[in-house]
Image 1 (cartoon, helix red, strand yellow):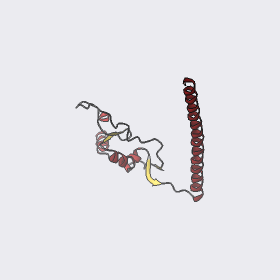
Image 2: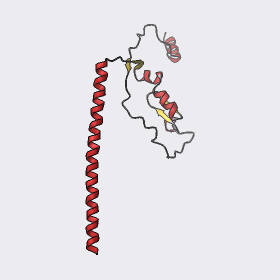
Image 3: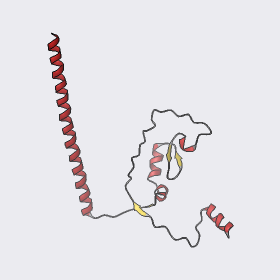
Image 4: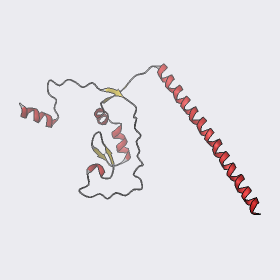
Length: 143
């Protein structure tokens, strides 16, 4: 009995009494995917280097190494990776009202960001103007 279970486990077969796993619908990615973090860096890779430290992109969830950014993005958006995260590939359906609320929230955030950057620009201009005036005063003193 135990040997049969071990063989099934090794082959990846389900037991007869296993209940189907209920997975969550697909969600938006929360972490930032930094594809350019190792550009311009050099790595010394030997035959004893651990696989996740070899050249390429390592997926911690699936424990696999992908050699280029396109393959890595395809993997992140793929079925197997999302299944390992506990999600299925179905997207949750939302109402029109919820979409409108989300769009309004995004517009509000964009306006706040624009207002903040405008305020920062004014402060930067004032600082530059003060520096120019200070330099002019210093030049007048020297003459």
